[in-house]
Structures are given as C-alpha cells and as structure tokens.
Image (tube, rainbow over all chains, first blue to last red; front, top):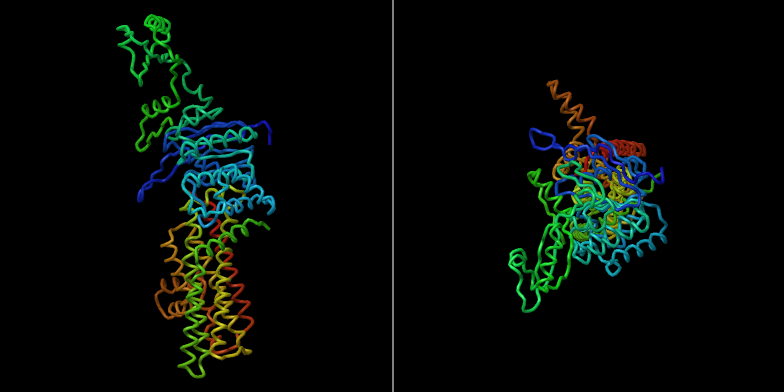
Length: 321
Length: 259
C-alpha cells in the first residue's frame, strides 16, 4: 500500500435497513457517504444520536454490509480480514466476557495477533498500565464499572499496536478524569504516528483533539475539514469582562448593556464598537479582566443543522463539558 | 490450519467452566451414588443392567440438555451482548469464530461425559460388579452418545445463527425428537395411501439425522457386542451431518448483518 495514502477511504457508502414487521420498508441510515482520513491524524466523526456514526463504524469493521458503496482501510478492502491486524476497534458501550479478568480478556484478544505467551504477558501489563487498570488487572469484568469497562475496551483496541484505531464514543460514560485520560491516550496514539478515527456527539472533545472532523446528520455528510474551517471562523462579537472601580458607578450606556456575572460584569459588543466601549470603561476606571472574540462553536453549527432539519427521534445531546 | 478456532474454543470451554455448567456433574454423581446404594439392596443379579441403563440414559439426557441450551445461545448471546463486535474486529473470519464456538462446546461435552463415565464406573464398582469383557460396549455406547451430542450441538448452533434461543430450542428439540422416530415416520409413510404424506415422510426421513442409530444403551446394558461396522457408519454419518451443518451455519452467519 501507499505509505502516504489515506488511512481510510470511504466512497459512496450507503446502508438501508428494513423496518416494519409485516410490510417491510427500507429506511436509509447512511446516504452516499464519501470522505478520506489521512494517516497519522485524529479524525472526529460528529453527529447527533441517530446520525449514522455507529452504522459507519460497523460497516468499516465488517459487522454489517453496505447496500452500496465501498471503503478501504490502509489501501485494503474492508472485507479483507488480514487487514484487521492493523486496526483496533472500541465499540459503542462495550461489553466483554464478564467471566474473564481484565488480564485474561486482553490475553485472549492478543492471541488473535499470534504473539508468543511472553510477548502477550508484557503487552497486557503495559497496556493495562496505560489505561489505568493495573490495580484491577485480576478482577473479573462483571465487577467493573462502566468507566472501567470503557478503559478495558480501549486497552483491547490498542493491545496489538494497530495503525488505525476506531473508537465509537470513547468518552461515553466516563467521569471528567476518565475523559481527560482518554484524551491523553488519543493524543499519545497520534504522537506514535497512529491514525485515530473517533465518533462523538460531545463537540468540545472534537474541538480539543481533532485535526479534522466530519459532520454527519440524518445519514448525510454535512462537512469535512479542520474544526475551525467547517464552521464560520468569522468573529461574531467581542466579549469584555470587567470589574467596576470601587465607589464609581457605570455610565447609563454601560449599565444598560452589561450583565452581572458573580461580582463582575460582561458585555458583548460588535467588533466595530470594541474600542469605543473600552474607552467608556476606562472613563469609569473599570478594571478590564479580559477581552475575547466570540466565535460560533461546533456546538452552534451542530444545533443549527438539527434546527434546519429536525428529525424524528434524533436527539441532540450536544453539551460542552 | 488456522489457530483461530482453537483460541475461541478454549475460551468457550472456559466460559462453560466459569458459568458453573459442569456443576451438573454433582447431580450426576448424586444420582449414581443413590442408584448404586438402592440397587445394591433391592435388585438381585440385575444391578449391572439397571446401573448401566440409568447411567447411560443420564449421560445422554444431561448432555442433551447442555448441548441444546448452551448451543442455542452460543452465537445469539455474543450478538446480543455485543461481545462479538470487538472480536470480529480482530483478524478472525466469521466461520473460524463459529467453528471455534462449536468446538468449545463439544470439548465441554466431552469432558463432562468423561467425568460422568468415571461416575458410572464407580457406581458399578460400588454394586460389586467388576469390569468384564462385555463392558467395552458401554464405552462404545458412550461414544455414540457423544456423536449424537456433537450432532445436536451443530443443529443448535445452526439455528443460533439466525433465530432466538427460544425458537432455536424448539427447532433443535423438534429435529432431535423427529430424528429418534425417523424409522417410525418412514414406516408410517409407507403405510399411508396419501401421496403428499408419503412424500413428506420420505423427505423428513432423509433430511433429518436418524438419532435412533446412535442409541446402543440397551445393547450395552445387556452386555451385547456392538458391531465394528456400526462404529464406522455412525462416525461417518455424524461427521457428514456436522460438516454440512457447520458449512450451512457459516454461510448464513457470514452474510448476517450484526445490528
């Protein structure tokens, strides 16, 4: 394969599911999806619940079969099982053999890559430490919390050091510390030169981590590019945070526009009015704490999409955490 | 030869052990001990007949329950619990997974049956019946039971690839019972004048495996010799059906969308 070629190529992937009991109709879950993921990048796959993210992941993993279209991973067709040596996959809400301990589970999965017993032992120890499960290595998975299962899931996805890692909602069910640790693992994988393709509906994670993102809604691709490029990067307004000087009152104009925020005040003004407003604040001897541009976030983009095309059953759980 | 089915098989066996499936051996042991004690007191001269009959029947029934009830959930459970998702992302083909699951359950049944055989031997010793030349037929009868269990497992796993455990249990049990009475069904078809019924019974006779062929419990209990030809015939018969069922299961499972 071309060492500089795309890690993932998706061309016109389409998936229809039959719905209904007696009179089956076909419902399109994924509609002619096409994009590429470059090697070594962190690629975020965004969309509200029901957008088709998990369907795409399952198609790429060969768990379901496309109605139309093709895909290639590392230059090889998705039905090439040998290619699976080079990929790792964390399913959404993973569940594993709960009668196994974490160590046994990872050893089991490592066997499929043909490692020797000594190699497997070393790998399992290393990866357990990486995901923070060393102390629970010999505990049966049925005693694991959701967050611990998620870590075990990430561990099995990377135990064989795959070149491309697919993570379906990797932050789901994790507390803030767990989420930060997963973010660190993803960044670590990128440092090692691996490609990470992860789906999420938590946009702040994507904004923080991704080199590029694709936005999916109702099975259709709405945009691919750097997080800042697929939404307007134009500054919408400027936000000023300030504290009034003791014993001084704000001018009527400032008092009308300012919003109190815990003993401080916040004003949002058009960019053209920034300096005039700053002058007014200086005249009142106010202490300016920060001035920052207000840009539309992916969150806004996402919500805008859904508002334009509200889908029955598609819930938006976009939340900045 | 791929090593993948072996990896899956060992894990399937481990699952059975950890899920306390082999606890049925305790019940079998209690049954054998109880039977040996009671038979030793009430039956004179026919202890062997009763113990062998009871022991082989219990081995067959216990094994059948395991083969059906574990077999129908082998694939279904992996899909329902989504444990299969991360597994199939590894370099393993679907047929390798299927053959591995099948081999794992057969391994469990073999080990379970081996322990039950030891229990039966112990019960025979307790009633003061030393081993004799004719006892070889007991081992052959147990071998036939194992062949039939391997066949039942293949049927169960076939249905497990596309239907729910409840339906798979009904289908597998239905085929097993039909297979036991396959000969009678054909005879019934020969007697009837209804063309459709005659055709249907013939199709059923040739389609459904004849489980009656695997039953040598009576012969073993009476110490009768079992012809060598029957061992070969039954072995080939079972292997042929198992191979066909596993190929069919793989064909169905390889095309299945795992929702």
